[in-house]
Image (cartoon, rainbow, N blue to C red):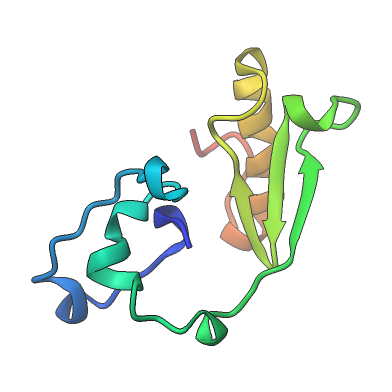
Length: 110
């Protein structure tokens, strides 16, 4: 689990020393510093697994330059990967994917 994919009940975690930083030394990404406070006692078999389907958000652009993922029904716009010169176009493509679910007209959300 990474920080951007987690929701918490405040009454369950409000007094815990949360740290959404990285813990690269333990091989953990964003939110990995919460290992001791939140995750160390969780049975991995109780955590639902989400299939990952990688795709290029921009048609005709190679995957690594416009990388996004569907994680089950969740869309993950990978922010640190890809070609920074395509960032605005990638964001527009992601907004087009989300527009039907958010019921927003294109061009109104920036």
